[in-house]
Amino acid sequence: MMHSGQNIVHRERRYYLAGFMNACVMACLLPIMSVYTYRYLNASATQLSALLGGYALSSIVYAFVISRVVERVGQHKLWLLGISLTASVALLLLAYTQNYYLATLVMIILFAPFHASTSLFMGLAFRYFPSTQIIGVNARLMATVSAAWLVCPSVAFYTVEYVGFGTFFYVLGAGLPLLAGLFCYLPAATKAKPSELADTNEHERQVIGQTTSGKAWGKPAMGAWRYQYVWPSVLFFTLSSFAITLYQHLLPVYFVEQALPISMVGPLFMCAALVEIALIVSCVSLLSRFSYSRLFMIASLSGCAFFVLLPLSQNVFYLFALQGLKAIMYGAMAGLGVNLLQRLLPQEPTFGVALYQNAFAMGMLLAGFATGGVVEYLPSHWFFSISAIVPSLCFLILLLFKHAFTAGHQV
Image (cartoon, rainbow, N blue to C red; front, top):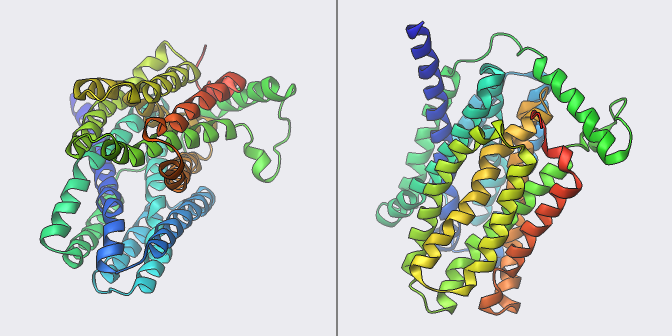
């Protein structure tokens, strides 16, 4: 019995290691892309926006399409192997070119499919781990993502500063085949997971349909309407991501405008990340006492309070203390978001992760567009007003579509 338990823990650790390494690739690459485009490719501001925007949109499309295909044909490991090796080739090409147009094509065509790796990887985990265990596993996997973003950006900037972009891309690209091998080494289910969770969630979708439209869903609709019961949660995650990302873009500018030490921005982000990791891991235990909707309501109110209180004082200790409110908002979204969508889509868990991932990416993309307008037209003490309004909209969504956030929870 003890030996069996040790085997289970060992298999879990393989998934966590793969999750951390997978997140490290993105956490190393994305923060340095703007510097790479400006300094290494000598691109203009317009060209920078085209590269980053084109990559963001193409990665969303790839994640959506690949997850839909894999739900139909299976072969998660084969797809993970393919997109990892393709991304490796892309990074090696970036290491040997300073042509902006070639680099843009490489990012949009060859590297963007790697965005689907998280949804494929977590879909594989959903099929392997028991239904009673997957909620905790998902939370810990999301915590590895936050841990990667806590460590890797600093390492990436240090590397490109002292050894150059070419060596950085070469090392990162050479590491991807190792990640591909680890994906192939992961334990996987030899048969489909029992349909108990699917049967339970089919009943829950009937309840959601009766609550929001006055009648049961009946026969599955075609196209996007087939998934109408998940759109409230997808919109919620998009808006939450938008508010958080807009804050991250604006905080350095706010510090400059308020003549605050810009060196404090990094420690503030790091402080919030440490609290977020703890909350991501622990928030799933709260599901025994609270529903998804109640926890997301608490997260939305915490986010609203954070953005309202932030400009009221420039005291360093005050700013650090407020990070707990922001951590509650992000921790609930990251710790519970994937679980909610997978339980709403138990027959399509890979697609559920892709929806969450794309909702988060779309929020980041919209925040990137909004940042310039906020800085241009709003005074610094109003910078976070939009971010304060957005959690209020999230709270309204939770009130209007409460039953769309109660999947898998007996209230």
